[in-house]
Structure formats: structure tokens, C-alpha cells
Length: 323
Image (cartoon, rainbow, N blue to C red; front, side, top):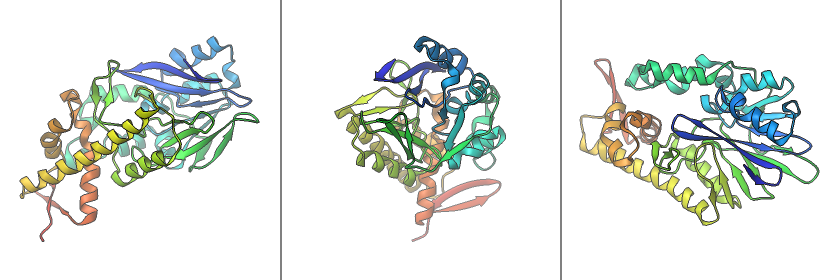
């Protein structure tokens, strides 16, 4: 779909959700995200053909972040366009290049201590590994504030927008006042194709996520384009950013109240079970993904000294610190 002159949204699906990549065409051609391993052959290459642009003209493919449905197409894209440079945020490079590191540090990092993670569902874990596909080396990394020239009159600005991942990137187009955010912003939920809740928000670092929201509020933005969410325009931009902040506030409040109700302490799994129903109406089988934001809120409370980590009998829990 053409969204601005020489700019396009490429649409496909991942499970029950929309999946979008973005194409910027000029003297230099830039692709934002490569999707899952099947996305290049099923969506990206056919889109280039419809535009009449040889895929070999693609100069740069930027992964917004390390996630199977955002960088998993790197291998098949690189096979089709050997000269394309693959890029990502500096802190996400190793996760994108090494699938075992991706799983150990992003999907399964809390299994041992907290009994929650992707690896506890072998079928889902195999599906995600298939989405990752063949990894390829990253050619270039960005830290934020870099400028990419599309032609003599148009450029893109790279933003560092952590919270969902340490190296998460977004792209800002100052001419159209549009920002392309991948999964940097989550609202109250990630929607399915009908707009109904599919997944809970998946920020995991609260302070970083709030800093990203502040970055967005400071930019002159008329349009927000993302990896899975609908397009937000005009007043809907502020509404979406408010929804992001409101979820953080609600999650923070629910976690605090859970610790107050349970002086004996709470595990991460216990927090998911207790806080989940009040935080959203996504399918129950996706509730475990609350491990990301709730662990983030626990870490913040621990850093503030509000709660204390307790290890006993092979379990890890936190409890309110003694006053």
C-alpha cells in the first residue's frame, strides 16, 4: 500500500496479527524490517515485482529489533539481494545474529528461576525457531540520531527507542512527520486482525519504555506506523501515546497492590495469574507474555528498594521490604 510518495507499507500476517514492513524508495532504497523467514518470498519480493523495482536495487534493510517476526527474513532476503546491507540497533546485533542467544536472552530467560517462558511450549518454540530462519551477519549498526539520505531532498532519521528491546530502532520522516516504530509502542494490547486484543504489551524495561514515550511526545508527529498496530493519525497519535502510558500506570498499580495483598511475597508466575485478568482481555493462553512488563515493574520496585528478592526452597519471589 502506498502511504506517501515513494513510501509503501508491505502487509502480511503472523499468526492472528497483521505484520508490516516499510519501503522507502529514492536514489537509495531502504526496507524497514524483513519479517519472518517466509516474509521475503511471500510478501517483500512480490511487492518489489509489483512496483517494477529489481530486488537487487535494495541498498539497506533495517531490523527495528531482535524478534523472529522482524528480523527472521534476513537470510532469505540476503539470498535474493546479496549486496543489501543488513542493519540493526547496536545492542540487538548479537541476538539477531545468534539464534541461541536470542532464545536464551529474550524468550527463555526466566524459565529457570520463574518457570515462565516460550521454551515451556515446544510447539510454539519450534514455530518461532522456524520464523527466525537462517541468520546472516549484520553489516551496520545504529545507536540513534543517524541520518539516511534517500535522495537530495529526502532523508530518514534513526531513533533509538528502547523498552521492548535494548537496541530497538525507529525511523522518523520529517517531511511527512511520520514515525515508523516497529514494536516500540504497545498501547493497551497488540491487536489481532479484527482489532481485538491478541497479546499484552511487551515492554520489559519500564524506565526505558517511558523514555521512548517521552521521545515520541517531543517529536512533531502526524502519523505513527508500526509492525502490528493500525495507523494512528492526527489526534489519534496522542490518544495512542496516552494509552501506552495508561497501561504502564495500571500495571505499576496492580503489581504494587499484589505485593500489599501478599506479605508472604509473590513469584513472577503468581503476579501474572493475579494481575493478568485486570490488565486486559487477550486470550488466556497468551497471558504468560505478561512476564515482560510485570518483570520490568518488579525490577523497578527492587531497584527502588520497595521490594526484596527472596530465594528459598528452589523458588524466587519478592516481598515488600521491611520499613
